[in-house]
Amino acid sequence: MDLMSRDVKHRVDVYYDYFPPKSMNVEVKLVPVGEINGIKSVLKKSTLVAAKDFKAGETIYKEKPIVAALDADLIGTGEYCSYCLREMDKSTAIRVPLDPFESTYCSQECQHAADEQYQSLLFSTLKLATAANPSPTQTKVQVEERRHALEAFAAYIKENGKTASLMILRFVGQLLADEHQRLIGSTINLELPEVPKESKLAYSFYDYIERLRSIEVVSGPSEEAEMEHCRGLLKLALEGLEEFLDDEKYLTLKGKVAYNSFGVYYGAGRTHRPQPKGAPESHERTRTPHGTSHQIGSAFYRVSSYLNHSCAPSTRPSFESGTSELHLIATHDIKKGDELTVSYVGTKRRSHDKNAFDARKHRRMELARGWGFACACPRCESEALNMHLHEQNEAEVPLPTHEARLEPAVAKYLETP
Ligand SMILES: C[S@@+](CC[C@H](N)C(=O)[O-])C[C@H]1O[C@@H](n2cnc3c(N)ncnc32)[C@H](O)[C@@H]1O
Image (cartoon, rainbow, N blue to C red; front, side, top):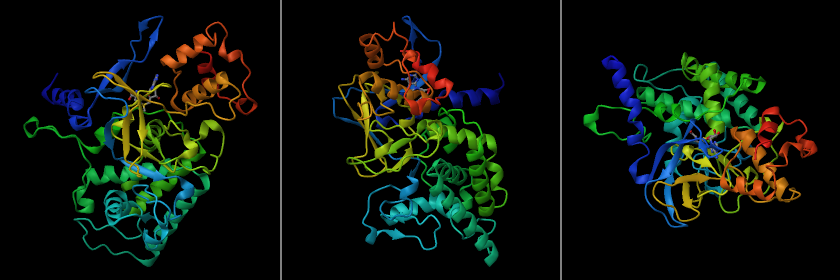
């Protein structure tokens, strides 16, 4: 192995020595994906483990998101901060004049952070000053062209009720800001892994993203439309930027957003979230133990992305600060080295579940659809035993009519306990 590739390997190998920060009390570990007949699988998945003991109810860590977005129907209402998702009094909200996204902020700090991370670069009609061109000029036609493109994107998001493409552009804003600090002329705090100076290692914002798992997203009409909007906006922000977001990169980022986002809700959450449009398999999903019907927005986190699912989880996400800051709370006593799990879906029986069996099936169907795995957690296993599902194949039970068009991949997961 030559010196160069040894350096690269070292950089990859030691990443998890510096990430997550020790102050968060957790570590990333590789564990087998499951067991078959008591034999551990050779396939591994990353997971978070506790770096010390915790008592039930204790806060394990607090984490602010890398990107967050209000649900599409709440954008522009002025009821929530566009950056931290805090509920606000409409009369005191800071409004941004002529912003096609009608952003509103609860404080100047939130406005400043949004500006630094993505707003000035990608969502403004003003041309960005760079070191090479500190006083850019633009014609009225150029301003109008950009306003038109931004309005069309905002309308597309509201009409379709999906915000993954907005999150992706906000990501891209930060990726660009990181790679091209000179574009915005200031240093953004992206909380990159802290490495000792003598190690000569340096990690970028992309290091966070590239290590996270992604579900495969195949390009369809929605993705084509989203890519066209996003690339159009990048090109208008700065000619040539659109090349940064080729099809492969867009679809990978979309897969990462789909796999890793959490639903944000506080208090009891909201009760009148509009039903998602389209077939169930095309719905945007977020991980939330209360079910997405209560969320006000979604958010993507560096460390919490590594949390795996269990239907009887050891932790729960809480948004008790009334913002998108995630507090990870222990649901029972946890020992150092234990795997930390959250529930990605609602685990309580809902009004439309006919019985416990129905509730279990819906929960597992959501997991299969959204995250592509058959849950083998202790609760699923013990319920399978109690319900005699090992003898009685689950797939033989007729599916509810609205699930009649279930994609074959999901039906397959229902066959396993
Ligand atoms: C957000 S990621 C969690 C971190 C992930 N395990 C990793 O290796 O980076 C979600 C993915 O982890 C895997 N996963 C999470 N919980 C699981 C479970 N209980 N059983 C099997 N796979 C699980 C699935 O592939 C799922 O789509």
